[in-house]
Length: 215
Image (tube, rainbow, N blue to C red; front, side):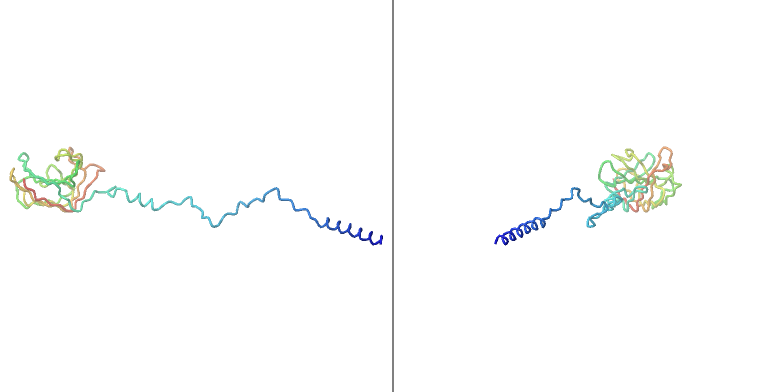
């Protein structure tokens, strides 16, 4: 009986030892975190091209540039706002003029008919670059920066191409009338003192215009 008890005690001791051997120590946590590969990127996030430009903004800026830059200011048909006319006995000239817009300062188109002999109508001049203000039988001007009459204008452009036709230019005041048309005018910035074009100056192009003015 004692031998059986001893045997059982021995088996129990061996069993406890086996149980303690099966117990494993949990692995230690890695104290140094794993480094992320610097070359790895999230392929779902698009890259920003640093050289890209916003073409919409660029196009908008371009559209706001002055369309007349580097060329003539163009009017297809002169609007003829606030037309006036007069005969001036000193110089024997009949003139008409009208504004581009009812603002101040304004831009005007002015025609002058000098009554050189023979003074018959209709009278037509086909302007060329040889035309001068001192001897033009029919003269055409565009003047900018005007506040009242022609003498108040800041800048003057004189005709160098196109056609001026006057069908009536009365030599009386009051009670006179002037009728005229223009076509395909080109007027260049003019030095009135020296009667010549301003080097590198601006220009105007007027496709058509008409006057029928009484005073």
